[in-house]
Image 1 (tube, rainbow, N blue to C red):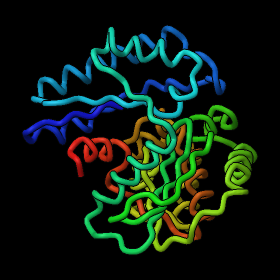
Image 2: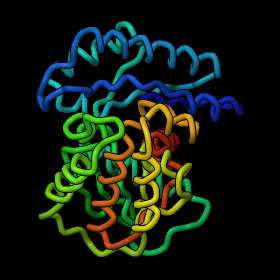
Image 3: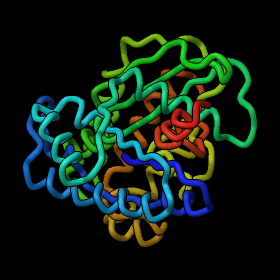
Length: 276
């Protein structure tokens, strides 16, 4: 993920430039990212850096999360991003990823969140849960080695996925969280690509009924058809049932519906750059 600090209105447009590279696709924990996929990602990063510079960015920061964090050749990846992508990459550990996601989620909502807040960040290769307050920041956090990409690759072989495959994802997510005891919270917030995309299907709150409705929509037909119906990327749609079930498991753990945030890790990086 790359973010840039610019001084004009083009920043908002720049932040919406996304590319699906699926670096972790088929990658076992601790495995090496194939050279071709590193080269592809370097090209994407170089393009994003160029766009940021054209927009007048004063500083650029690139960060990497779970996939790169656990890769056997993470140093090779970072070197390629520096030499061919034109930017140094900071590999975030789980704690820093949780902190930045919490910052981006809690500081970009239209209304102030009172009490203790949980932020759930379901990424492609990991899920972070952070608990704290808006003023005090993160008090408790955990990082879990599963995300929408990992779960989809491991279990969702059919398009659309079968009920049995969905049950396997649900069971895996539940087992990963089974021994976790977070502090009690007053409100829970969801960030990440799956959560943001689910807003198009069911609105701003992910509760039991809305999650069930969204899962029904996502499994009604092939990913390409669902994508066309909701103006989503087909690759994103393929991952969304897994991401949804990860969010469902987190919401159950926290005992709260999940309110979909307007910001997350990316916005947290920007706010951190700004010293907020």
